[in-house]
Length: 423
Image (tube, rainbow, N blue to C red):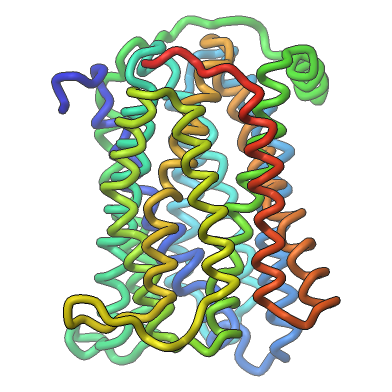
């Protein structure tokens, strides 16, 4: 396969392998639990929850405001890798710092997490924008899918190792679970740095180093960019469709564990489902990358939206009774996780490659700043809709079914757009 990929594609995709350790181990895995049980020891649970949520909100707000502006600066200088490196080092340093924070020091933990999360999210802006000079319109879907696929694999491998370490600290010569969690933060930082080196030190296809245009001062950058987008029908409608269906995707990702707990699934089932998504997501992200090159990214996204509609209906009828297949027993939550794994990476990678076709190549980082800003404001409407429906009906199944409206609306907008040329 590598012979058919642009020069530098594997180095670029390995960054996904590198940084996916952060969202799996830190964001989804250990930080929320460790923050409440270790760093917030002696603090009311409600207070700990508030500061945990506030940390995420502050980091997301910083990135949402800074991403388009810094993206414009990167485009103006042509130094996308330098901006990526700076953001990445902030994230890595703050992640390593988490291992040094003692019990009860929740303000320090919250501050370090804000820096780590902001660094991770900002680095993604510059990473995504490098897809455009890398491919130059060729193999966009395949390369984007390769990145997401390796991301699932890398995040899953390190998370599996860290789960084993936390569950059995004595196997690794560690005193207890707390020591194991702190070591896992060190491993994330090291993994992130190590597997980023091929991108940072290697070639990058058609990357150009010249200055493209002067950076617009301050907020005029964002205002001018928004005006441009509003005057481009295809770009405007795609971003609307993306906001709707990715809101549904993010809602399912963020609410799945809570939904499973409400239905009575065990912690083992939920951790097993998370690992299943990571390892199953790897081949299916690659498959969707290939599919996008064959039938076009819009068709691939619509297929994924259709599967998400099926997922919402299935989730609304989920039962705790195990399923039997070929002598094996597994929970219905695992089947739900398998369906999600089949399309989660695909819908994200094809959205990235479709958007990359629409942006001016010399302003990719600026436009991807707006793209990621929109992503930060996703998972707002969905959880609100779900909460209202659950509050009125008292039924979590009705709440998860309501998320189908976001996929229906996003798909309805997307189907009006043309299929971009295959690449």
